[in-house]
Length: 106
Image 1 (cartoon, rainbow, N blue to C red):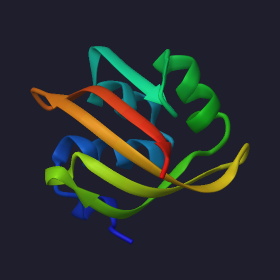
Image 2: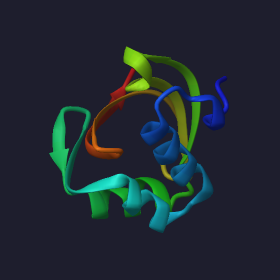
Image 3: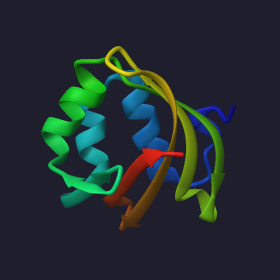
């Protein structure tokens, strides 16, 4: 497992740290104003998705590996709704903020 503080990309590091801390404000701060996302190949609205998959269900990311200069992660993701599953995360960053992220089963 890679501790969030040791992730290569500082923007991705901030995202993972915010998720694991349950910090909605830090999560919002790391996203670009027009950020988009997809879950298992379907585009989603970030706010309701995050409420369901992260905040109200205690989402947590245990990073197993990173690639693509830290913009691609394989994670054991767990929450109170789905339990634990291996997921892949891919991030697009621009100016220190995430403009898009994609997640899905790995």
